[in-house]
Each structure stands twice: as structure tokens, then as C-alpha cells.
Length: 296
Image (cartoon, rainbow, N blue to C red):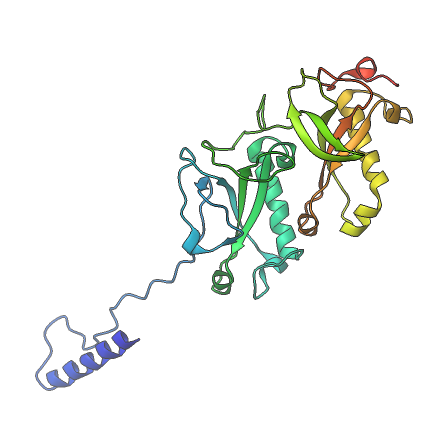
């Protein structure tokens, strides 16, 4: 602002000094009308298809230092979108369970699954929705970032360094895809799901992700029979066996549900596994039929 005032004052003095002395050709006496308009401020928007050394929950500009995915990194930004509608009209970034957060989560689920080649919950991957800082939001930023990372295991979400993009990471014979497991039990509870080769002795196998209904987390926790039944249907489809009253005598079920905060943000993906307790499996049960998965 001081520059504008000083320039205007100088221009006024010059106009007075020239008064009565004539004006050179091409001078229109107005010394400010030809100044270019100030350039509008550009809001920062992060880039997609870049990677990061560290993960972020909030997209502070001070922590934004993208790198090529061919370099060692922990997180990859697969998609960047823009929030519109009710989720973008608040004076603060979307909070846990809000319309805006659920909208961003749903969009990230869709875009990330498309990029990976399968549901991100079907492999050793974690998804984080990153939003602008409160200061950036107040300044008009409405972007959201879909960040994906490779995790240690289904029981351990620790993120290690990796190289290479995760695009297409769940296609073909991907080492990240969930397949067969040897559960470690403490009494009747699963302590750990240890990933093993399907040709090694094992007792469990991942069969898919069930999208639970849009109900409260409390209600979901109270209706575990419905979840087991839904996983049974997934087992029947996966193993190509009848989905009838005999199914429970062919295989049991194990499932992993989203954490409560994830549930509030709209994650309804339940990871389903078939479970055989009375014999060792040494092959995948995919398309095994009634011979591979008999009534016992």
C-alpha cells in the first residue's frame, strides 16, 4: 500500500510542475491509467502423481516437499480433487464424520481403487485423505489429497520406505495383495494374521471386501452375525460353493472392520476371510468348489 501512495504523490507533483509548460506529444497527463492491474493471488494446490518422504494428516505448505516416485519415499499422492457443495461451505476444514470428509473419502476410495486396479483394502495399503490447513482453508483452498502408502501387514500399519509408483499395484500376481494366512490365536481371539504362501500350510484366506450398510458404528458392532453372514456369501462366491445353510459347515469366517474414526468418515469396507480350523490347507480355495471345500 505504501508503494501505491508514494507513486501517486510523485505523479501529482510532476503534473503540477508541468502545468503551463505544455505537454510533449504522446503524454496524456494521466500517469497511472496505463499501469497493469495487479495479478490475482494464486491459491496453492498440491500435485498428483508425486511422492513424499513423510505422511501428512494436514496439508501444511511448510511440510510440502514432493519427490519423484522413483526415489525412496513413504507416501504417494494418487489423486487431488476439489470439494464443492455443502462440504466446502464451512469456515473450517471438514471435521471427523462431516459431510465434507465423507465426500472426500468416497472420492478417494473411487480414484485410488481405479489407480491400484482393485479395492485398496484388499492389499497391504493404507489410504489417507489430506485436507488444507485451517489457514489455507480460510484463504479459499478447497482441495483434498488422496495419499496411499504400503503398510507392514494387515495388523501393523507402520509405513516403510519404498521406491516405485503404486499405480496398478493390486493387479496380477501382486506381492501386496492379500491371499493366504496362518492366524495366531490366543484362546478364541485372533492375535495376528501371518501372511503365508497358499502352497504352505495355512488355515485362512482372504476372499474380498464387503461394503457394510451406512449405519452407526455402534449398530455395526452389535450386529456381528450380519457381518459374518455377509462374509459367508463372499466365501460362497469366491470358492464357487452353494450359499445355503450348509455353508457354515464348509468354512468359518474371520473379518477385519474399519476403526471407528474411519467408519465415521465413510469407510465401510470390511475385509472377509474364510477360516478352516480342522485341517491344513495347501492351496487356494478360489474356485475350489464343493470338493475343495466339503461339508465337514
